[in-house]
Image (tube, rainbow, N blue to C red):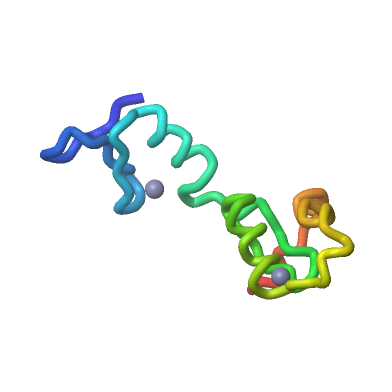
Length: 89
Ligand SMILES: [Zn+2]
Ligand SMILES: [Zn+2]
């Protein structure tokens, strides 16, 4: 796979404005981020996130709990195979 580079030698994504210093990062971006549905879903409000860290942060901000049941932050990921696309149209 060949990619264009900008004047700084960064590899440019062909479909969006992202660019990366390392080709591998661009490949990862295209594979897992660009044009890909966010894979990590909040099981409380069903918002989706591209990165697990974003989902974690979302939990912390939007669904802050007493802290007694920490450890369920990953539950949204387990449900990612369920097709809920029709909820998002
Ligand atoms: Zn892109
Ligand atoms: Zn949520």
